Length: 274
Image (cartoon, rainbow, N blue to C red; front, top):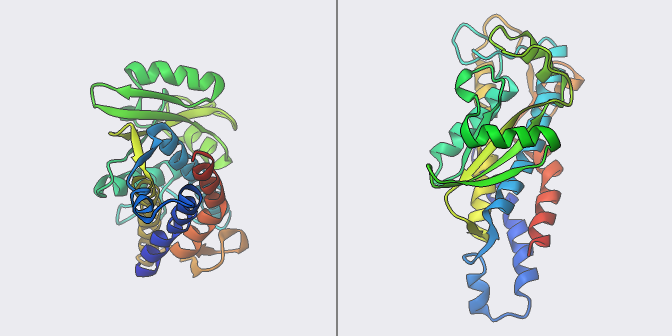
């Protein structure tokens, strides 16, 4: 776990350092020191960044772990945490695990997944979010607003069915209110919330790291669950993926793959916003 924590700490330090060099070139040392504390990013920009990181992570988990894992005989279940169930978390529950981890962190970032046809009735959009979700279904453009009741800046991003595993699971679920989902449908929206209208470099990095740590926490919980399997064949955990056989990557390998896929876009976004 120490190695992963170190990786997380380093992942965005490189980005922050690069941005500081760009933004502070030729500026006195005392001004450089304040660069990381000035509020320079709008909350909408930061929530869009973390949303893109989430898109990469969930797609990788859904396709490379759940989708390919099922072809190797691996099981994924909504009751995966129960002692008598030997399975991993479904994609929506993977996201819920990330959200739970973030909630426990000192970073005031909120995350949840909602829909107009949710498997869990508690996740059904109501009020303003229900209205904005109708717009999202039309053009898949994100919606930003201030939630006055919660006093939180809020961003909603389309959650599109991008893998057969998502469509099949929802169509076959006994509690699903909709059973004709197909690839490309907007199944719901990930909703992000933050209390401030702007963030400093330091706060932005904290948000990104909080999300990354959340993905590690839930993935490691899955790997720990596998260790307790008694009836099911345990996949070999190392540097290989399910596409190669009955394998699962370690948390370090999984996170490294996420960062390789997402860090460039995040870095580019950070720099171009400067």
